[in-house]
Image 1 (cartoon, rainbow, N blue to C red):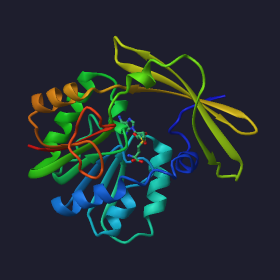
Image 2 (tube, helix red, strand yellow):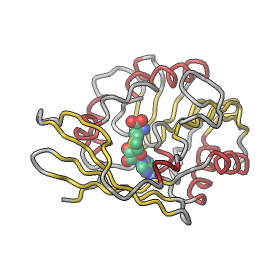
Image 3 (cartoon, rainbow, N blue to C red):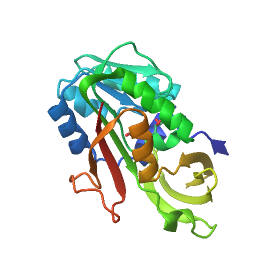
Image 4 (cartoon, rainbow, N blue to C red):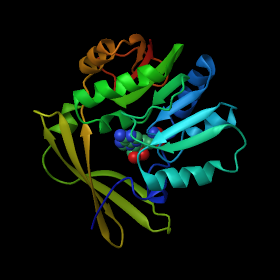
Length: 243
Ligand SMILES: C[S@@+](CC[C@H](N)C(=O)[O-])C[C@H]1O[C@@H](n2cnc3c(N)ncnc32)[C@H](O)[C@@H]1O
């Protein structure tokens, strides 16, 4: 059965329980910059909770309605000034300015064209305070991954919310003309569910150019959460931009 990958927040959380290595880095960037904070594509609130616990005024924008409803429930008992808004990150205008705006964990790859990226950057620019910081965290496209043989490759194993073990395999089809990687994930437990999703491979030179064209100055470009400088060996491209 084919399912939207962002339709079940419990499944998403279970599959991504391992993703914790960015929390300290993003929290420290927020502490250095200050709030209020706007997170674009805030998912299930994985990064929202630690930031709200630090006392930040936090707003998350997320497209998936089930994810928004789930996150609102999770955050409800936490004291503080926080809100999750259902909307499209490339067109949302909250009529407010934020000191720290960020987009984490490869979510920017869901903007499938350079035009969408530019529209998104303009939207961030409008809502970023003077002296504020815009952070992007995403992977560097890897040709070995993109051009590998068209057969199932193991991605990960995890325990489903019902306790059953689930093995995830994938097949991908990269289109070099559009620079979109078409990915099919197979979640294999007592049944097999298929998730299809597309990711825009954003090469670092394109990211640099589009950020500059949108009026941003790239203040720092790291290759990992330890703040090592970006290099040809880097798996991540982490941008800290100012207006
Ligand atoms: C890889 S998940 C990352 C979620 C979260 N940022 C995290 O770090 O766990 C990507 C998220 O982007 C959201 N998304 C995709 N396109 C979006 C859009 N145009 N506007 C807002 N959210 C979007 C998806 O619904 C999903 O929650």
